[in-house]
Image: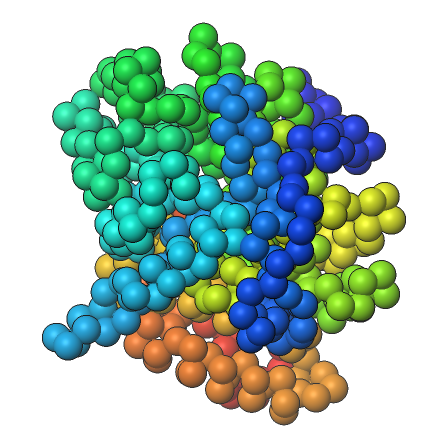
Length: 462
């Protein structure tokens, strides 16, 4: 019965998706104004044209009337630098520059959390945003009580610390963070300790303007939370063209999640539109399909247009570390051109290629970090996935261009991940496994990558 229920939920057709993807809720200005002449380089190195300052697409929050930029700034990956003491810290000057540029070009939704960037994100985001009028931005942060201490006092202290670090006296959007593992987890973190009751009162008092939750988990918990007698103002879900019907691990197909939110008039905030960057570096075969329709479009532009097309999507988050990425994403949403039927069909074909590849479904979210043994888990997976997307994943020592592909993997591995932080040093302690929102069996995948690496080093047959 359970399998049949899940099957029915996954069988919602693409045409039912298309019914929700009009542009009626999009509000755009009319004049194209370029900024500096050097703002014309895409993240893929191609020309993208002028970056407009007043063409951003906005969506209206049906509950508050907020006019929210379709492009949201995800503050999970702020750039770092080494200070005079040899210690890593957030590069605040670069953060300020990125935030200033984003606001000047119409971006007004900024998403952070107490656990992002080793706990530094909220303070860095607050410093950058506090230099602007409070009515120029919406700030979203989270109740990130995911690491064992679920007491009421800890939850309240985290909430108040967020406002202190962000330098605000109210929060526009506040989320129960990473909900969905189990009903027991939801109750222990927010119900049994009285924390949700407190947050609801904070909403009544106006210190929380919108209360929602971010979802990673199983369908039964998603349904359970929606069935509660709680008015949810929004929900953050993982949505991209691969996860629409082929969500991995314990995530749920975005097709189902989105449809349930539409039924209840709950706006969606979208995370992982690029699946941790994997949809920005698709295999060559997939990229060629895209270029047949849009020769000048990057894979990232395709993915962002897909994520932003449904009407109920309030904002699509992107963790933009580099100015080029910020500029390209602004260009994509200024204004948004919704996908058409032919483009959806192309992305279905691209998805068929992706789900039959050797990708590890890591979004490089850093939730597994720090590793107690010093491994760079996202770095290892990221390098492996880049090799897969470039078509360099070898199946045999007799493969064409074996030497070239072997060198690309081994040399690139040492350059991107220090030897002491590579997969060979994983001891399988399993500490990282419950922290992964994608439910990746991290130790198992590390062993697989290490075995593959050893085969290449020793030139063994596969």
